[in-house]
Image (cartoon, rainbow, N blue to C red; front, side):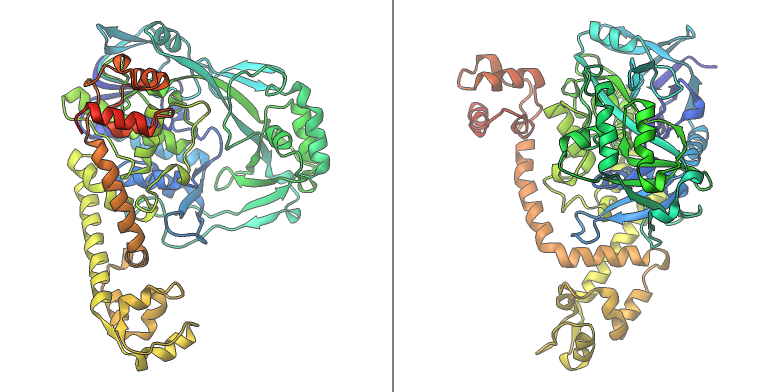
Length: 625
């Protein structure tokens, strides 16, 4: 057995798995240390991946050569594309996964990844010499050395669970917390704090009155998370179901508020604003008589259901009584109650965009230790941290994604520039360039970058290149092919759109919101023949990609122009060039924040809360710009 590695990853959650996989596949001898090897990539909360903006992150992970999209597709038991009624910038894939098979598939991948070893143990300390990380020590008394270390401990750092007034130490139900790392890092000068998240009750599906629920079917088309055409959904697809709380439910929940850790002072830390507990909902939205809940299956064959929307830390009797006030759940039996968990995190402004810490060279943070919530946000950070841990270990240039290149870039820039005062989750509204960051073209944005790094395979790169060629060929065909009014008008009337007065290019017809390439193909032989020439396995994907570019090219070009203007400020280097404390023309707040965050560029400085446009003008003036 070896005890020296290039990269060590602490924690095998969604961030740790991506980090370890990336570092190893790039060529670093990598060690993944986890408290329990049977809980690798555990879906601690909802057994689902994706959703608004989160689905875009998973597509980006896949485009970069990560594993989350592949694992999700292989273990999905329901898939849906959210926000279809809106423009393609808002389309967001989401899948329910079989929780046990998701974890098993991740473990299978990791165990068969060259250069990757695993060790079951609890990391209790870091080995640091002269401000440089050198390795880790464990509860079993083992010391492993490394050139880079990635900390992805999730909710395990001094984790404390709450069910009413009952408190249990642990990082997850039935799993021990991790102690020692926070205390050591705090002594080294790191700023730490506490955050809270929660999870709902788990329900025995045999006790649900399904006839009183509303079924919610998935979709079965060509969409998925992975761009690899041979990665498909093969498991049995299952329905989700909706129910609603009522006035009686809310009265029961209010009775429990005095014993709620959120309202009796037991929990001091801040929880996620955008995933509130059921008790927070009835307090914040006191005027509402009902709240929608989703019964979502935990697996292909299991009777266990997750009650999305009923996250709670109320006492067990209150949780059960409130549930049984919902008609469909009148006889419900549960597997376990919902609970809240408090855990340590580190102020992410202490990180560079590479996710390396500013205080210790070679030490990287990823996932909930940075104040985020969500598997997808964690996995995206893990992938970037793993890449940069490898790059650091072998002395190669670092890897950073811009805000106009990926939602992952937006996520990391938000964290290291603005910090967090509540668990951060991604939304499309956080991305100013969301038309550029669509889920359909993450491979076009990112796969070439990953291929140059050595993370994306030759096969993946060629698939992307082939798709781009076929997409562009289809767009060129529509630009060049002319349609005569007399030939197409009967079809246009049949399709419910106004007839032509004169001939036009096919491209101009596709611009009409009522029409699509597939709608027109049966009426235009040349178009139908061209579509038949496209690679069959990815034909629908390529047609959709071409159509989005045709219909939205004007918006895309305008957003790219804005992004290019802002990017010029990204080229104006700032770090190390000015002594902010001596610039009296800056506001006191600006001086303090610029000194603390020490932004790399003027563009990053402009995104720091409290830095005004006049402050930026002063910086540009002093830089001679």
